[in-house]
Length: 114
Length: 111
Image (tube, rainbow over all chains, first blue to last red; front, side, top):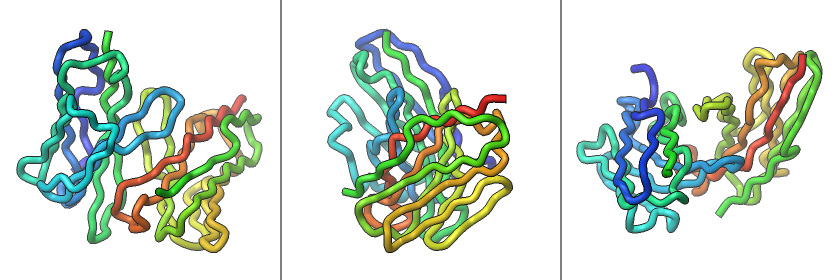
């Protein structure tokens, strides 16, 4: 287990297209988080899962955004009808409610909407 | 919601200097994270601490829970330390919950 993996690393898409990102957390971590980071800012919380249940969604997560974690392992974040304002780094992190390796981040997916 | 403030926002140092970055938060917490982010985006967790001091190589993190304040120190700074350093605290006061982040401190170490 090499940590949290995100795919793709970079995505360039035209405005109006749909995009989907994937996150594979550390296998023993039951919590998975999505954050968004714009240039010069700290990350902002989007949503998180405990196992397969989505426990919290930020108001930043408009109805164009949807996240799933169907089997409590990997997660996907989909953005429909992308807008230029969606351009950001999308970060995934995982943690365990029972301690262990602590809070671990992926390398992020950088989305550019043109 | 926990508010997190970092200072300074930008810091330029000469190689070998001792660096201090400060973080203050508004609501009591069980643990605080210091993170490092290099150009290209990936975030690396440096420390998670709930009391006292932790040391890893040239990096030292301290926290004063009563004063709601933490510091990150870098001894004998090196150009490869140039990065954004981010302080983060749990939003719900538990170590496994979502994090609220400071805006980061951009550190540049010149040779």
